[in-house]
Length: 263
Image (cartoon, rainbow, N blue to C red; front, side):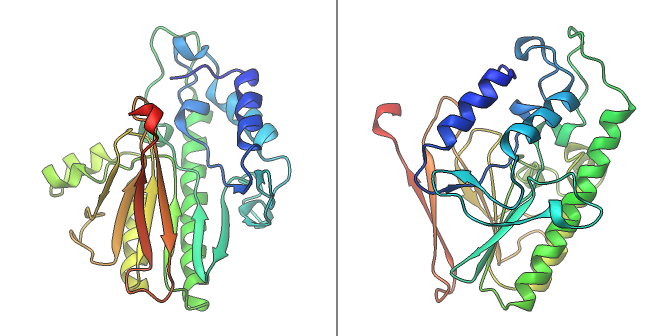
């Protein structure tokens, strides 16, 4: 994990604001979930989550970045006001949504035994609450996409929800356990993707491995209209460009963008 100090948060915010475009930020495990680790500062993760929201989401419904953009925020949905980070927007009639789902089994992994940080009931309750919010936001996004006859949907999150595990574990308890923290979300994503019937992309990071594939979600194996895109990560710092064409059969086009200095 990385250092989780306020100073680092402000440094990252300053960097994000140098982008000339709107910057959509969805929190990841390094920023709060894993901050209990000794090398991250031995913080209580829930304290870091609260601070992260204070720093990066001061104006719900408006992005950060050099050219802020208005977005729909779950903070304005009654009953989910504590989730300003879950946002949605439309571009070229395509529906995009950011959902707060993080690595380390979505925050369920045990704390570092060497750390002074202590995991309590509140940490488990936070995970359950965030899963509830994620499911609501995914359902709401697909409802809106179907209502507006959107040609495609892109869902972004930080976590790799262990989709590739399904290649080796076709189902049953082993697969469920491997995807602890993600199972309910994947079930909803699968059902909504099948019902939507048009291209759906899940874009994420987390495991630092660039890939574009079509893994199964829960029960249905290959789903022709579902594609997973994982971005590059630490030690392989490049980026991925996704362009959209609502008139194209596949809607989304993925390109790997290699930074020469980082080869």
